[in-house]
Image (cartoon, one colour):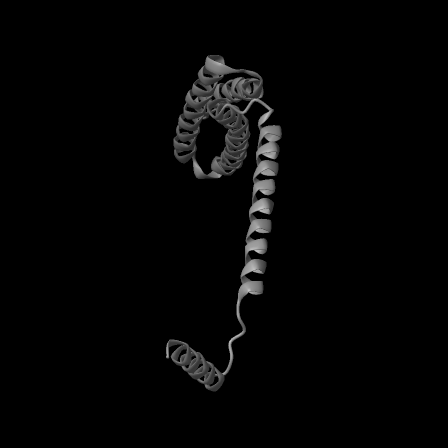
Length: 168
């Protein structure tokens, strides 16, 4: 049984070496080549997970007195698998950024275009603010100060009396 485990170990070592090499190539590739490489690495990672499962089954069948050594190897292999998956995730993020830029048409000049657009909008906002302030000033200057209700009533009577005299 340990010979099966050792065979799986060799297969796992070869497979993880291939995966590591391919993960290093992913960020450097473009287009369809990159898509194919990502799909290939995903397939190989799945194969590595299946190998780990087979190895774990073998460890369960090993007699208890020898099992400790194999269990520690399994922990090591699982940690290695976790590192491979994390590295692959990082390489895919770089891949995702490139795809995002391709889809959005981000050609490097977008920063300058965004800056120019922002400056134009800022100028427009400042002009509108100045017009609003000027309109407010005109409104404040043309408002007739409100008098007390008594003086308004008195002024109304004066106007009525003046009008009445004029008509007569």
